[in-house]
Amino acid sequence: MSFVILIVFGAFLLMLPFAHNGELSLIDAIFTSTSAVCVTGLIVKDTPVDFTSFGHIIILSLIQIGGLGYMTAVTFFALMRRKKLGYRDRLILKESLNHPGMSGIFRFLKIVFASIVIIEVTGGIILSLRFLADMPFGNALWFGFFHAISAFNNAGFSLFSDNMMGFRGDITINLTIPLLIFLGGLGYLVLLELYHYRQKSVLRLSTHTKLVLWTSGLLILAGMFIILSMEWSNPKSLGGMDTWEKIMVAWFASVNYRTAGFNSIDFSTLTDSNLFFSTIFMIIGGSPGGTAGGIKTTALALAVIGVWYTLRGESNPHIFRRSLSAYQINKAYAIIFVASFYVIISTVIFSESEKLPFLRILFETCSAFGTVGLSTGNGGVLSYSALFSDLGKFNIILLMLMGRVGVFAFTIVIVGKAVQSRIKYAEGKVVL
Image (cartoon, rainbow, N blue to C red):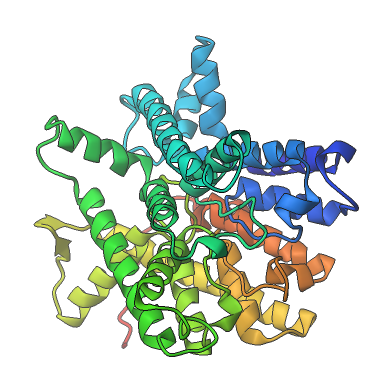
């Protein structure tokens, strides 16, 4: 409900006459607000053209609050006012931050805010210095910090109509923005643990942190390999670029595949095989407790580990010399199954109602659900969703909200929590 209220409030502000240029329908205002709050980046209006400076400030504010989490932001400001919080507030904050326990939750929150400020300011300064070569100081400062905040929160909103396509060979842009995206998608718990590990206050990284780092790194490398192998000679995409630009584009796209919506290449030029593989990366998303959506890297890792040990006939799955509980692995299976169900059903409904190419609809659906923001485009600078009917746009809005809140949380709202039964039935045998 906090996300819904924030979306509605954001849409109201964007509808104000001095927040946009030209006509802005209610559904487009809600779509833009949802895309910002859910840190997605899909657009049905050209951000730099169709919104004023005030509108840009509103969008950036929604991105920051949505990326951090509404409840987390409210709790932090309550703490700053020295307001005492009860057990229920602490529990909500724990769930919002994906913190493992109740102890030290407020200290963790303060460190999270300090980390966000340091990372975003550093990224903003680097990008501002780069943009200073192309624009006046004031504009460079605004563009630098807007893109830094958008990148760290994995939003993908840009003040350039062609997004990052004009910087596809630029080393500063291609290192800074992906690094900000990567840090935002790791999760605050991982960032804090890495800091303590560097300070030697933690002697061993947790299983969660190791799993997040390994899975994220392997997925980035896999994405780069798939893009380069399938697009290397494609004259519509990478074929006309030199080797350096090909590597930069592949790296940039691979990082953005799972978390953010920045693009340095027109995705409508990619092969169908590449577009299909990219939908898998988008569904996976980032890591828990961060600014990314999707099923999360840990769910994928646990499912793969569970399948591996099941095929080997072992009943004690483990990784990094630590055992994994059957409940966690079964939960990973459930998350993947439910997410796949939502994506498949939504894609079929879109395909039948919108009468548009199936693969492009699948790409847009996965991008919305994973809160990624990449799109094959509407033939111009807008996302493919701009071609959808109002009902189609509303369905994309639901997918973005679902992906940001989380598959389990969204589903529990619909089906309710399970009631514990005191009856245990005799075990039944089923042949597989």
